[in-house]
Each structure stands twice: as structure tokens, then as C-alpha cells.
Length: 170
Image (cartoon, rainbow, N blue to C red; front, side, top):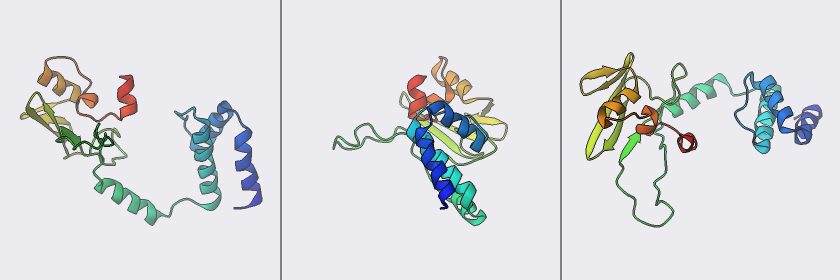
């Protein structure tokens, strides 16, 4: 790393959060959702180095996408995982895949989303034109959740596709 880049990265520590957010907009072309100073400093330093030194090779990018598409991502850890108690049976799971064209919360077309609700297994297939449940196509997960429960639900929340931080605010 050259001296000028190192000096510029070190100067990030003296900036305010507002200045860091403006720098983020400049470097990434989008607003930062974070107001955490340390996070912003690390993210900006990484980006500045990537721009100066070159980012990932195309081969490394493709490999990362392959790994991301193959990974089954657990949305939430079991509540008793650190208490030393036996793990409960899995009640619902979501397989999340990377699809840059679609909503990042949704699995790719052809995937299945499942959840147990009141002793019944609810399975939904992701289709190009919506979601298939019980032989019918629905436009949204919320409409399926409403059909199953009889009450208004956020579909992403019902099927466990919302990260825990977002779910806490819902």
C-alpha cells in the first residue's frame, strides 16, 4: 500500500459520521444504511484499497457466486444453542440463494419455502410469475400467509425470510 493511500485511510478516523457517509456515497455510489463510525471506516478503507490495488479477479468473483448459490443459509440460530440444552426440531427453514436480478430476500425461481403452522406443513414453490401454494399461483407471500392464517401477515416475516434485525422492528 502506498504512503498516500495509507494517509488517506488514516484520515478517515478524524472524520465525523456525516462526512464518512458522504465519502461512502462518493465511493460506492449509494447511501450507507449504517451510522456506525467503525463500520464505515472499515468499509471505506476496504473500498479505497480495492480501487487503488484492484478488486477481486473475475475468476474469484465467479467462484464466490458459485459458493453463495450452493450455500444453505440459516436465517436464525436456535434460541437454546448456547444454553447447553438439546436443539429443538426444525420448525421452518428457508434456502436463500443469490439472485442479483430479484428481491434479495427471496430464493431463486424453483426453490421451495417451508414453514410449520399449527401442526401443518406449509410449502410454497417460488415461480417466475409468483408463488405456488396448494395448486394455486399467488402474487405475494403475504397473500399466502393471509390464506393460511386468516389474518393479515407480512409474508417475509411469516416464512422467516426477514433478517432478525428487520424482524425486531416489524
